[in-house]
Amino acid sequence: MRDVNTTILVVEDEPAIRELIGVNLRHAGYEPVFAGDAASARRQIDATLPDLVLLDWMLPDAPGIELARRLRAEARTRGLPIIMLTARAQEADRLSGFEVGADDYVTKPFSPRELLARVKALLRRASPASTEDAVEIGGLRLDPKTYRVAGDGQVVNLSPTEFKLLHFMMKHPDRVHSRARLLDGVWGDHVFIEERTVDVHIRRLRLALQPTGHDRLVETVRGGGYRFVPA
Ligand code: CA
Image 1 (spheres, rainbow, N blue to C red):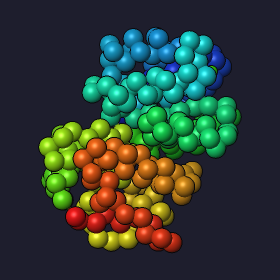
Image 2: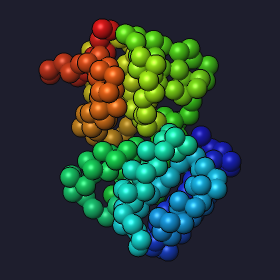
Image 3: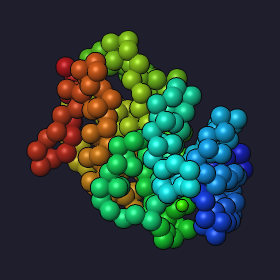
């Protein structure tokens, strides 16, 4: 998606990194806007919703994950694609980034090529498949046109990645999907994505489906992958 109207909010307090990201985004045809801390990021998002947020973990006023958590909790911003940027490479940190709702994760120092590949892949994943029909299985309804999921009429909040993952599985029910196949079908360009990432998003998807009991529809197949099983 090379589109001058695609706005990417870069939340980063280090001027050199902000500059590097900005130059690369502009070069790829995106329109970067910048915030140096969580509070000003919040103000900008409240004023105009960007198409994607690159969110640094360590900000001067609040942790980036706190902002991610709040964005996911609110109706207006729950579908906002978020990529966390961080100098931390610890597995635990990566997982907590995903747990609060980040769609992806890039560790500093990163190559501009890798960052752009991830931005492109996430934008593709998050763009609504507006021509597709709603699917309803076992009381769980997913509508690609309105970007809504409901379990027995109750709204289910999903990030763009979990939405796409659920949609893919609901379109191909009763089949075992390996992690590699899910990466192909959901992430698309997954050259930088590890297979374990699938497990993290499946876990988040199940958590979101738990209140209505629809998590039982997402089955783990030992040694195989995952299967969406109509109730
Ligand atoms: Ca920082």
